[in-house]
Image (cartoon, protein in one colour):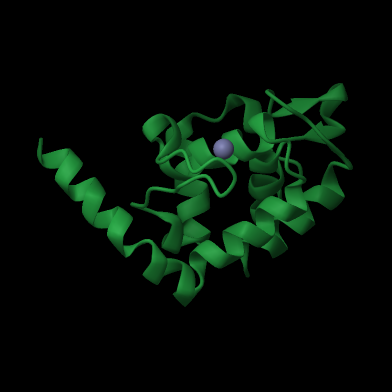
Length: 133
Ligand SMILES: [Zn+2]
């Protein structure tokens, strides 16, 4: 499944979008990360007790293309938000730019596509240099 399909499944499980919190309104609202995780599990998850390590292992288990990657914000071009790869960019697009969860899913689809990977090549090289310093 593509990222947008997991997110669409998660959106159905929590109708409203939350900001700066994984869930709100007694679980009726969720952010994009929650939608992705719920969509992967196919049910409402206990996301608030998950560590970042756990979140990443769930996401990368289904979407390995997103692992070991930096992401540049498509809106303001900030590079490698918070230095935490996929989670950083998901929080940023959801909370700071208030993108709809479906929109973030479409953007994620591009990141896992062949074209998306090619366009990231330069950034991956940049990242390697950064780690050596
Ligand atoms: Zn941004």
